[in-house]
Image (cartoon, rainbow, N blue to C red; front, side):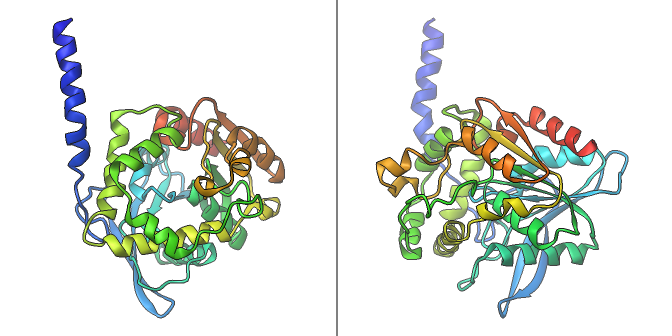
Length: 332
C-alpha cells in the first residue's frame, strides 16, 4: 500500500515536469518523426513556390489496385493517421497521407488566400503528380470539410468518401456564433500551450478520458507552435480558422454523388467559436449525437456508423475497431 501510494505521488509530482518539457520542432515540423518516409511535393500556387509534405505508402498485403487519400484535421497532421495507414496498406491499398499547406510538414506562407477549393486543388495536383486517377477519400475533422469539397469538385475521381467526426455538420455563423477576426484568431493562437491543448483534447476529443499515447499528438502540435516558426504557424492557423468559419459545406451535403460513410463518435462537442458564443447559442452547438443522423439523411448515398461513448477522434481512441470498420466498408 505504501509503495503504491509512493508511486502515485511520484507520478503526480512528475506530471508538471513532463508537461513542461515540450520539445520544439521546426517551421515545417522538422525533428518530429513520421511513421513512413516523408516526401515533399513542390508546386506553384498564388504566385509563390510551396511544398506539401506527404507519405506515399504502398500496399503491404496483396495489392488491390485502389488508392486512399487521407485528409487530416485542424489540430492533427498526416502522422496521426499512422494506425489507419498501416491497416489500409495491409488490406492492399496504396495510401497517400498529405499535410495541407499551412499545416505540419508543409509550407507556412506569409500570404495565402485559404479556401477549401484551393486546398482541394493542391491535393488534386499532388495526385496528378503521383499518377493516381481514382481514389477513396477519407477526411477527419476539418479534413472532413475538405474531403466534402474535394468530392464535390472532382466527383468522377472519387469512388467513395468517408468522413470521421467532420466539423461543419452545422453552420456556426448562421446559428449565431459571433465572428472572430483573423487578428483575434492570431492573438489566440500565439498563446497556445500544452496544458490548454491537453485539457481541450481530453474534454472534446476523448470524452473526458486520457491515455498516455495521446500525449504524443499534444507534443506534436505544441512543439510546432512553440518552435522557431512560432509566428508563421500561428498566422497560418488564424487564416485557416477564418476559412473554416466562413466557408460552410453543410448546404452541399445533398450534392454528394458517391457512396459516403459518416463515422461519428457521439460524445463529440466540437464547434468552432463556441467559446465566445452567447450561452443560449453555445447550448445548441456541437451535438454530434444529433448531427450525425441528421447529416447522414442529407447525403443521397450516406451511411452512418456511430461509435457510442467516444469523442472527436475514434480512430485514435479505438484504432482497431475503427480500422476494421473502415476496411470492411471499403471491401463491400
